[in-house]
Image (cartoon, rainbow, N blue to C red):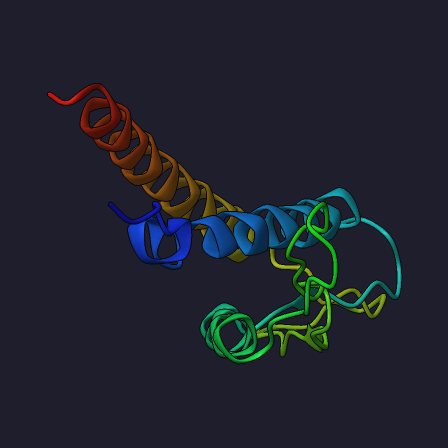
Amino acid sequence: MGSINFNNALGIHPNAMLLRAERAEILANNLANSDTPGFKARDMNFQQVLAGETERQSSLQMAATQKGHMHGSSSSSDYELMYRNPSQPSIDGNTVDTQIEQTLFTKNSMNYNASFEFLSGKFKGLKGALRGE
């Protein structure tokens, strides 16, 4: 009987949740600075960052040289934030469009919740499998 491989069982959803949480902070920062003169809205290319993180996780494994060592992975914050191009820049140089930022924040939150629900279902299934159900 083999052990449970969480990477295969859970897919990319744990990484996606971490990246979506980081993106939520970026978008919230944009919204918080919507009235700050000269503030430039920033964002990440979520799809590109997640693809890079997934590739890095599957290709980079740290060696466990002793029995008590845990397997590690690299940080997901190795991406470059991009500046958002405003559709209508303000006179004071601020590039935050609150409607766009709120839309992106809401979409990001919904995707985060979808990944959370997916993972919750997976853990319920794994728990049932361990009980022999």
